[in-house]
Length: 199
Image (cartoon, rainbow, N blue to C red):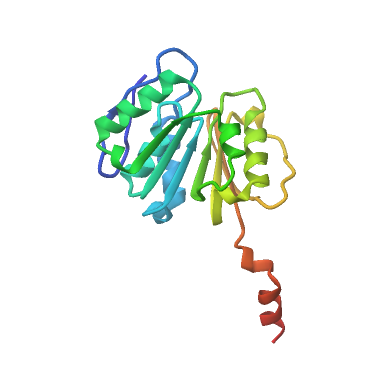
């Protein structure tokens, strides 16, 4: 199996895979569909690639014009692979690679807020629910109007109760499901906006 950058400044560049079977690279057609959905919102945006693996998704975001991407993984081989892929695509200047546990990172005080958070953890362990709940609890990681995308096997899908994040789209591609959640703009339900509607 080989993976590549689909579009943008690094289009066509092949990416290295993480040795072993600890990661599950996203297929090209799924990745292409993802960024077709995100559209121009990716331009100059900030992107958090949790459980980053090869870094393929975050690298695609950078290639398509994201201003910055942070890659997080807790496996040293994955971190090395991401760094090598960033060098090969000449996108390292807008990237940060962090060897860390995703859940410890999401507990970090005063974090950076991202426009898009991509969650693609190891399958069948319930980690996607834990990660999504962590983001919902610590919304300071996500910009108002920010988006969270969860990549799971369709058999893993189950309803989840969230305080603020709300699902707005989902797409199935064979054995991959992309589930989109948004953080509604805070002003939508603020007292000021309610008063303005009454005037």
